[in-house]
Length: 448
Image (cartoon, rainbow, N blue to C red; front, side, top):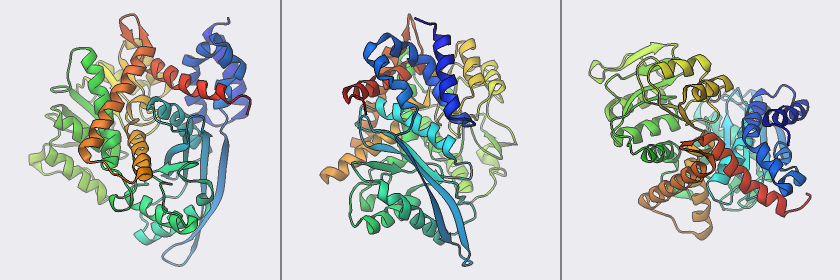
């Protein structure tokens, strides 16, 4: 059998020829290819079915124009997409993102990652992702409502509880899901679980907002438990100021950790002695109001550093990049290692560049990938779908217990597949475990 390096190089040459210029997508594919191509080659059924190559081609990409009217009565035109990557193990499932950076490459990378992430949960969920290049910053509530309604006017034909179930993502929260679901209900003339992340009054699940950030901490606790350690007392550097970052910080504080940072595109907020619940709420309030993270009351002991990232500014045993893709580069990773980093747990999707991931590997730092660690959000979305189907809703305590159990199972599955002597390669374990589950289904269907 050819070497892994040869297999990956030949495979990526073919994929790159079909996806010219789609750097984010190609980066995501290569990362998984390094771990699964030898697995596929060694399994005659997988190899004959060309499973992995099929998984790099979306089932379909739906693109459409979104025309809406702003408050001044002017027509605005945006682009919208839905990438339906694979429904081998269940209906397409993945978020909607509204941001100027959204394009087919970003959405294909996210849908590709989502396919394996959803497989790891053990729930019957396929992979998809969608969104628009619409920028909601500075827009009024009514403009956002009109955009969401226009967007759903195109998307509604392609989704449904057994077909494709979108959720929220960057700039798509409970408010936007409300507008989107209201429009879907009108267009489809049905009230059913075609979206998740809904408000509690119309079919949403308890703890959906908290689930991704909390799940990151539950996974981290599993990693530490294998080392006979606990989160209490650990110094954790977190990047981001969105839903995942702030809820990861919230849960870490409640578990006794010292959270030393949060950040946004303007800079980083350092808390040498650790964030408190009060300082976290102040930061959330500033972010919600679109105000600066600088100028905190003196008693909160927050130090704002403009234009900087958290990595290496102060000592941290655990890093949690929770902002966006490729936010941590090779130099950032080396700075974090020099400051005492022992464990990196991704909160965002693919937040490390290839160079950063290699730097961590060279330094012997344990690295847990987002497709395993941040699967808590989609796991609770899966529970929301179940609750919608049988018309019974779980309590917060029941959902939290289910989330802990799912994150424990994801950890144990990735650890079992990624074991190498006394060490565990969580990235390899997560990639292989997700791949095997999807591959078994793909082979069972024959040539389709």
